[in-house]
Image (cartoon, rainbow, N blue to C red; front, side):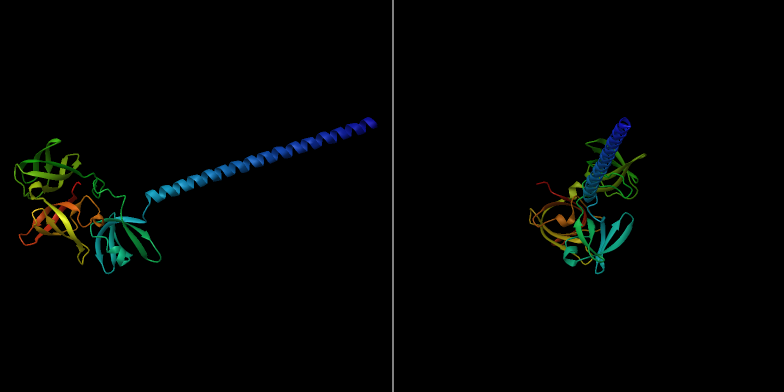
Length: 271
């Protein structure tokens, strides 16, 4: 009987140890599980923070596009193939111009803040379909109704283009073009002989939101430079400042004083 009691006591002790061991194991598993969940949460949190940070960089603006019109009702911005109107405070809108690429961030209600789009590279332009616009300078060779040849730093080139050319063989010309499977397609050209180097003296904006520049050349000749929706620049218009030096390629220029210049291309002069 005494041996039986001892056996029972031993069995109870062994059973208690097993229960304690199982409990510790379960707690360990639960703790490990919580630790794993915590790690996953921390990883998720880190990934979320990283993603948010990436979003902040890549998605710096709620909307990005090109200004096509500015009027009393707001700033009209083309985003892809659609134009939308945005309400922007006058003191903010007054710093921007038609033709400029901007970013807009949502404020309260239907209002937006506006910025020069720092993600847009004016020196690496693309077509609406995503084609890369290239630029080359050369000496014009043959001029035909549907193409021009030129000797360039890249070798002899043929650029197709429908329409009339106001170009002469032997002239120095800068071409904007895209590469297509059947050859180079010219988008525009700029006669080097027509360009003017000027210092910016005044910057204003007309009623339609177009930039106007009053500038003076080294010979003290004065120019009223007008931009339109087709004017190409290698800088954001809102970044232009008084006393900046620019090179202007005219589309048309009058003999008035000051001469009125419809600008085809404006580039910032190298400092």
